[in-house]
Amino acid sequence: MAGNSDPLTPRAKIAVTAGKAVAAASRAAGRGSGSVIGGRVALKLDPDLLARLAQNLDVVLVSATNGKTTTTRLIAEALRAAGPVVSNALGANMPAGITSALAGGSEARYGVIEVDEKYLAGVARDTDPKCIALLNLSRDQLDRAAETRMLAENWREGLTGSKAVIVANADDPLVVWAASSSPNVIWVAAGQMWKDDAWSCPSCGGVMQRPGDDWFCGECGFRRPTPSWALSGDHVLDPHGSAWPIHLQLPGRANKANATSSAAVAAVFGVPPQVALERMYQVQAVAGRYDVVQFEGRDLRLLLAKNPAGWLETFSLIDPPPTPVILSVNARGADGTDTSWLWDVDYTRLTGHPICVIGDRRLDLAVRLEVANQQFQVCENLDQAVAKCPPGRIEVIANYTAFQDLRRRVGN
Image 1: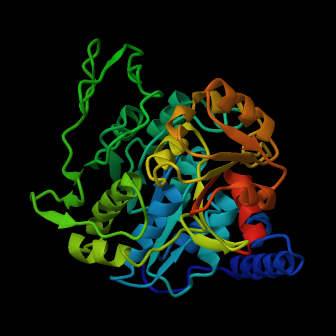
Image 2: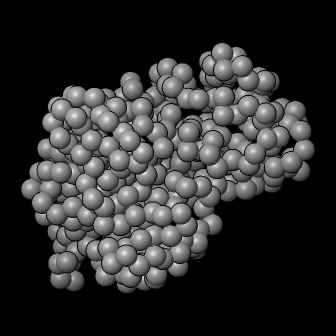
C-alpha cells in the first residue's frame, strides 16, 4: 500500500467536491443516491481521478454475473477486522459509481469494489488491485452484455500478467479459462449450480465432460484445477485442511459459496478464516436483498434474481410449498430489454406454490408459466397480489428494476 500522503492534486480535489455537490443535488431532487451522476461529473473534471483515489488503498475487485454485491459486502465486513474499509456497498459498479464511492473514503485502508463484468479490465488498470475475486460467468442482459465466452476472453486479456492475486472459482470453466492468464491464482471450489453456459470448452470449443463435480475437455485437455479452498457442507476448508464453520444470516448455498470465496480473499490480507467468517455473520441483508418486510399486515421476503442462473439459485432457497410466491419482471434499460431469458428458467421448480405475477412484463412471464404448467394469477400491482396470496410468509422474487420498485412500495 502507498504511504499516507495526500494523493489528490488541486484538480482532483475540485473534481471530488463537484461530484459530491452534484450527488447531493440529485438526492435532494429524489433521483436516487446520486453516486453515478456525481462520479460522472468528477471523472469529467479529472479523468485520472479513480486511479488517484485508489492510490493509497489496498484494493480488492469483485466481479461475476451473480453474487458480486453480496460477496463485496462479505469481504468488506471481513477486512474491517484489519482496518477501515471503503466500498461501493449499494452496487453502483461502473467507473462513475466506483469513483463516487472511493471519494467518500479518505480515511480507509482497504477499498472493496464490486465491478461490472464489462469494466473489470479497465478498473483493474486504474486501481492496481492487490486481489481480484472472480466468482462466475453466465448469460445475462443479452442486449447489452457480451456473450459469456467474449466476456471471459476480455477478462483473460485484461488480466494477463496481472500482479494481483486472483481468487477464482475452480468449478466454472469460463472463470478458470479467464483466470489462467494470471501468474498468481488461488482456486476455490465454490460450486456451480447453473451449467448451461459451460458445456463447450472456452479454450478450444470442444464438448466439455462433466462427471460429478469435475470437468474437463476431452479434446484439448483443459480441465478443472485443484482447489486450495473449498466449500464443504456448512464449512470452509482452508489450504491446510482445517474446517471452519459458516454461520450466516443470509440464506442458501450460494451465499455459503460467496462466504468461502470471501474467506479466501480475506486471507490474502492476513485476516484468518475464523475471524473473517465470524464477522460475516453481521450481514443480515444486502441492499434490501433477503430483507423480510411488513406490508399490508403480511411478511414479505424480498429476493433479487436477474438472470437464469440467479433464478435457479433463488428457487433453491425459498420456503417449500404451499408458501405463496410473487414474481415480478420488468424489461427496462437497467434490466436489459430482451426477456427471452425467461425461457431458460425452469419454472417447474415452483410447482405447488400459489403464484401471483406482477411487473411491466407480467404477460410475458404469464405465457412462460403457462407453458411450464404452473397455476398462477396475473395481478396489476403488489397490493393486489398480496391480497390474493393465501396465508403465510410470501416469497417475492423480482429482477433488477422490479426489485427497486418493490422496495419503494414497501418503504424499504
